[in-house]
Structures are given as C-alpha cells and as structure tokens.
Amino acid sequence: MQENQSKVKKVFQLAYAGKFVEAEQLTIEYLKQDPTNAELMGIMAGIYIERKQPDVAKIWVERAKSNDKSYIFAHYLEARIYHERCQWLEALKKIQWLLSAYEGQINKEMLSSIYNLLANTYLIFGNAESATEYYLFAHKNGVTKKQIIENYSNYLFNLNYLANVSDEAV
Image (cartoon, rainbow, N blue to C red; front, side, top):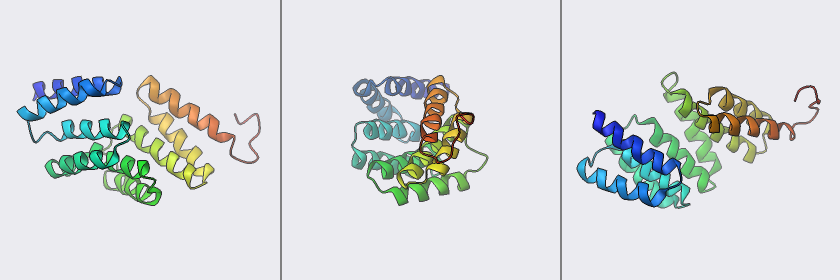
C-alpha cells in the first residue's frame, strides 16, 4: 500500500509540474504492475485534460470509475471534461451531484478545486454573484499556496463584474 502511494505521489508531482510526457510514461509503467489502480488512471485523465484531449481523458475517467466507483477525483475530472467540451450544463450538474453525493467526505484541497470549477461555470453562465461566492469558498478551502493565491485572485478579479461594489468592500 505504501509503495502504491509513493508511485501515485511521484507521477502526480511530475504531472503537477507540467512534465506530462514523463508522468504519462511512468504511469503506464506503474499501471502494468497495478492495472486496477484508479488513482493512476485519474492522473492519466488529468494529463489528457491538460493536453486538451477530453475524449482520451474521458476513457481514463471511465476506467478509473469502473475500478473505484467512489473515487471522488474521477468524478471531478469528469466535470472538468464537460467543462473542456463546453458542455456547461452537464458540468454544472456533475459538480452539484458531486458536492451532494460526497458531502463531508471531500478533503479541503479537492473541495477548493471543485468550488473553483463551479465558480468558473457560474461565470460562463453570466452569474458573477454566484461565481464570486464560490471563488471565495475555493479560496477558504485552498491548501497549497498556488490554490490560495489563484482562488483569491479570481475572487478579487470577479468583484469587478459585480455592480455596486464599493472600494471599501475590496
């Protein structure tokens, strides 16, 4: 178990650093040793989302979900795929379902990512007020410095879209 977590952490760090080719090669190697590892499949899906290949990402998400139906990250990635495909309503439904189905079970870092995606979706629908609210939720749940800064920046930037916001509120 410890070895699996170490492998997942290693490929996640490579992917997070934007080293997608290395992450993909190593993940494929690890999947040969552990072909049912949903976390590794989720990382593959994330790599393909970042590469703007949502159809390939969807295949990896489905594989991950078939191996672990309660793997929250796979459901989050599915919402991101809908977002990438400009299927905004489907993305919104998936995010709302995810927040409802796993209420109280989602760690802060994942919750921050989900709220950020939800805010982005509301912004696309032209609902700046809800977007601003969820950017703030995302900020408050951020774990990494990158999440905290990005979400707070989105929150402040989005305040510009709201009418009647005074300088004192910012």
